[in-house]
Length: 558
Ligand code: ATP
Ligand code: MG
Image 1: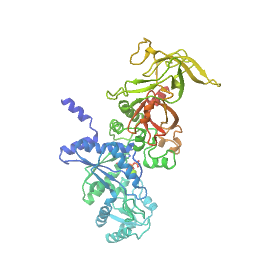
Image 2: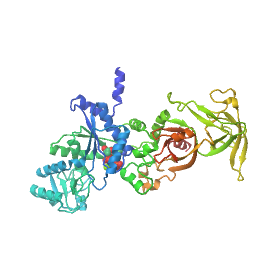
Image 3: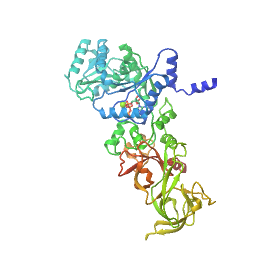
Image 4: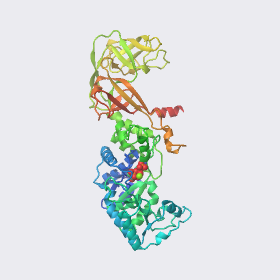
């Protein structure tokens, strides 16, 4: 019993340890976390990591999670992004207690700024951004305060009111905190609190022409909501003392910030701004292009919420930045799809075979729609004397261990019969266009009386029953492990072969009833799902992932 308990304790991540300590010491009766996206793009798998962490903590410890849109920058934010963010979180399976917007706090934040001015801890500065940067010093040299820092409280109150009233143009003035120009932490060298921006905001419209800086809005928004554990990524470590300074001086709820390592994945980029570039410059078709690491892209590609949650759990919560192998994410989806996908037969690159001794038609029983699922059921598929198999499953002059079809060689057709290749028919160019075969009537799957042993089993479809479908085969979006670390522009490393389309694959007829929510394994070929562009007239399937990790094999080969 004790051992089991120890095991459990060991597997806590460092944030869970903090939460458990805070709950057992009575510091908090219940915890409140938040997920705070800026609505300036669609969420990506890195955000999924943060969502699972914040919502997961609340679920585990009986707390709650707010969704707060950090919408302090009117220029980049849009309602479309707000909607997509909500959809993505819901799809992952989480629900928030409250939907909040930092912009709802604009008046409160304005009053916080006035409090700081009244304490002579904030001043209006007329310097240009270049001057401010130059006065800031360097990490090894202290900065210098300018004459505007000498302004009186009354003067600052008036000027700040005038800023709000729209008396000044963009960039003419800013409000700064008076902290410490000599601090080794650059964030504390009189940071900006407010800037003038005559811009329309997606929610507050034209009410404001001054907007709080992210750093002045973020921590206080946590405070306003009484967030107990404010979890963010490592780049905010140096901002924490500033947030604590605001909390202290404003005497507001002391939310505590904890930082963890941002998720980075190989062969992709993970910043909304960079992903937006890919969309705008048409390197991909949209935010939900199945090659994108966006949650909507992964969803469209066929990833399941379970696989994404499982992935974030496997990588854990780290304190140091790292780069996670894309193949781990692929492993997680493969593992889930293996359990849930319906097996279907689809021929990607057809080679016609004619079974010369078979007449008539029959429906054959595919005894398992999914061998991993007892309740997966069975189905009938039509068989006839003309079938398609894959070109790659035939070789005229095969090497020794080629267990597929070759002249004189036998294979089993999946859930059907054993056939033998008798004759190879070629066109004028010498290309193999058809095989004449015979089948062994006693070899029918499920009641094979032939006594024959064959090594290979091939998938097939009946020519006259098959339906056609477009298949979209995706690969990594970038050729470089970390495109941001390479010379030149990250877009120079886009994989030109990240999408291959097969416009006419032949599928077993049952697939005409494919459903958007179903997942399929095209036997021997990969995992697929219906694309949202698919229609009754034209079926389109996305390859979610291959059956095996082709890249791992490549790597081994060197
Ligand atoms: P981006 O550069 O992609 O826009 P961001 O950090 O600016 O990322 P936000 O919308 O501010 O995006 O992020 C919302 C929350 O998600 C934040 O708490 C942030 O720390 C977290 N987050 C963002 N990217 C990642 C990532 N790659 N891994 C883990 N958490 C992340
Ligand atoms: Mg951001």
